[in-house]
Image (cartoon, rainbow, N blue to C red; front, top):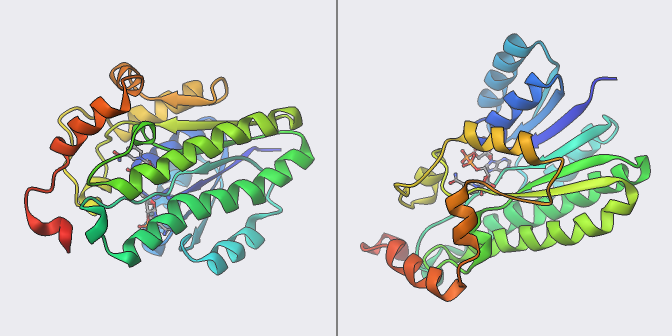
Length: 253
Ligand SMILES: NC(=O)c1ccc[n+]([C@@H]2O[C@H](COP(=O)([O-])OP(=O)(O)OC[C@H]3O[C@@H](n4cnc5c(N)ncnc54)[C@H](OP(=O)(O)O)[C@@H]3O)[C@@H](O)[C@H]2O)c1
């Protein structure tokens, strides 16, 4: 039977690049995101290019009812690999960040990841095989002044994934947490942050994930990022506070 991978947030950026890599490996794809047109386009492109079966679902994972409805639709599809990729971040001073935006961030970056890990993880444990890949960030390794909720959410993903990896290993289920540094995607435009001069492409991130996800519990992308992750948090926070300072008052809106 053809293996299936479920990728959240798969219409662009890292999610789309991963969909291409899994399709290259012969996986059938189950993809979700909010925008139906982008999903239809992704389905057309991927089916044409790789000859795999692609099922798409328009779902806002911030909405628990929609998430559960989505799960009911795909629960019996024998998902071999779950990729919790969809994520959002907002730059600006924490205290002036909009409550609605931070609520959505918690719902998507934390709550939806936890819910999908549980729902699909249980099925994988019962089957005795499967893999969960969670997208965190190098932001997980220290607090992030002027992007506080995003970094905190990614710390949660890292911590949760590492614990789950230990718990699920005896069942034959592997958990891998991926921590990219800056990646050139639409994420930055949407977050209101500035793209760092040091960045990589979504395609490169996907290549590294494919190479390492079966062997490692934590994958930090790039040797400079691996080095930065082990520096003391206090040093990095001072640097981040300067680098991410809004300089204008847009962070207060
Ligand atoms: N870019 C970076 O520098 C970077 C660095 C480290 C880690 N990461 C992490 O990597 C992951 C992917 O980032 P990216 O840069 O590829 O992001 P991206 O280009 O902004 O793509 C985000 C994807 O998630 C979907 N999405 C957003 N909100 C959603 C929701 N409420 N429900 C369902 N789908 C939703 C988007 O489609 P719709 O808008 O149609 O929903 C899109 O397909 C994220 O978890 C991010 O935190 C990114």
